Image (cartoon, rainbow over all chains, first blue to last red; front, side):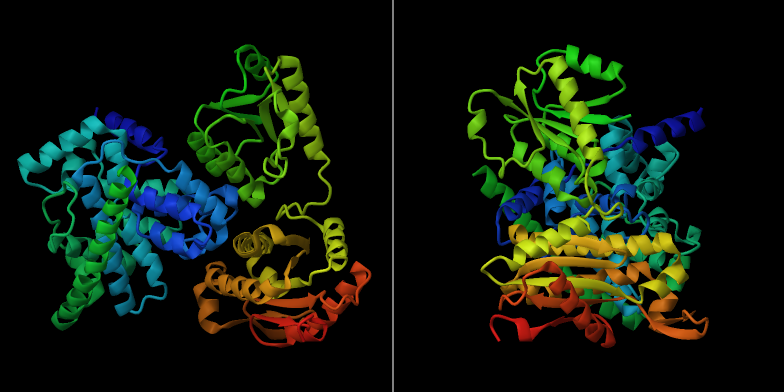
Amino acid sequence: MEKDNKAEFRRALREVKNLPTLPGIVAKLTRMADDPDTTTEQMGKVISKDHILAAKLLKLVNSAFYGFPQKISSLSSAIILLGFNVIKSLIISASIFELMESSDVELWEHSLGTAVAASILAKRLGIKDPEEVSTAGLIHDIGKVAVKMELPEQYDEILNTVEMKQISMAEAERLVLGLDHAEVGGWLAKGWFLPKKLVEPIACHHLPKKSKEEPLATAILHFSDVLIRGLGYGHGADIWVPPLSKVAWEELGLSAADLDEVLEEVEENLWDVKGFSLDIQAELENKSA
Amino acid sequence: MARLLFAGEVLDSEEPSLILKASGYQILSFSSSQDAIAVVLEDPPDMLIIDKELPGCMDLLNAAKACLQKTNMPILLAVEAKGLSSLDWQEYSVDDVLVKPVDSENLFARIGLAQARMGRVFDNNPLSRLPGNTSILQAIQSTIELEESYGVCYVDIDNFKPYNDRYGFSQGDDVILMVARIIVNVMEEVARHKSFVGHVGGDDFLFIVPEEMIDETCKRVLAHFEVVRNLFLTEEDVEAGCYVEKDRQGRETKFGLLSLSIAVIPTGNHEFSHSAEVSNAASQLKHFVKQKEGSNYVIDRRRSSKS
């Protein structure tokens, strides 16, 4: 019986089409797109701060139709290859939350915070392409948005379970759906032909020991996720900090002194994130004013 | 099965779309331009039929024109008969018009005609969909006849042959497509209406920009190429900075990784009367550029109007 349900949930989630994002960010980008002096790079910088639009951009550039399936993992490359007009069309066609809840903003902040932490760790650990790990950090919770939009009844049940049983959202999802948002995010990314280097860290970010090909990137993403949650930064209805995996911690090989420095750098950078978040909210107020 | 996308209120009855469906067309119908743009972006149709009065009509037209892969998609605009003659076709760059109310007979003929015309499309390169040699020579010819000075820029991928041998021709095609997209997107952003891009063939491209934009466009093309290039190389090759392959004589030779060379011929001092002279000048300059290591562009300053 449970297996049948799982197949049904899977089918529903597969059909997910136009995931919504924050109206403020779309308003800001629309304003930028109408300004003839805006450059593609400037728009790219803003898109790189939104997990939904970033995922859409990667989906688009990796679709068979644009000719580079499973190749493009970097947002700056995607922007160069798609060009201004395609990005403008992407923004026009973007859908926004009709009823925005504070948890939507928090999940967005959490995603951006995780990307910031992942970028700092990737640079520190000498990863060749830190942007790639940071991008995985940005879109790692895309599965949560898909569950919320496609399975609203089950999503409410998951939220109740989180509160009642005092467990993490991933655990509650496994109880209710038989799968968790990491798995969902993983196969969404795979179905969108995103490169394996992004798919595996996303799919394994709650169970890093399952990562076979990208253990270090997965460990960085897992740790960044836990770290940002631990700092109390944007939980998005997932109120309990998930446990840190021993496997991932050993993979990172960080000392206590390293950790202090990482923490300091992350906290410094989170101020920028907060600033951007306020900027986005102001954008919305300007628009409605 | 051809997919037709109808955006807005093109048809006032069910009948025409039923006939189209019965004739094997797949019909996609949208009442909002936002939804239609999403489809054009993610899964483009074979033909677009747009109601001129649809809010966001221009955005949809721009979306359809934006991408290389879609340059062959015919666009039909449905309009009211009144005011038809005063429409600005530069603004509405569509392939045909349908006058409302649209009857089945007329619609059917126009769709068939648009498809047939598409099959006749002249010399576009099948891979990049960019204009080929006939259009390129025409573009050069009309450029040298202009009063203002332009730069005719020949782009060539260095070490493309050994790349193809090492990675296979399908990956080689991806690199060609990447370069095509980079050039088109830079032109779109920097030079918009004042530029031309063509695909000479293989790994050779050409673009034409006003002389004052030569430096900016060349620099951007090369910088963007540097950002994207490594995604098309294995980590080992990037680390080694070169690859060893057999050369044309079968000897093992070290080749540099992919790079771009651009040879720029300014038309400013009006010494050219025929397009062939420009390509001759370019091929001489190209040998010089290619001797330099890595990605470079060289402008033939002797011919610059500002020397």
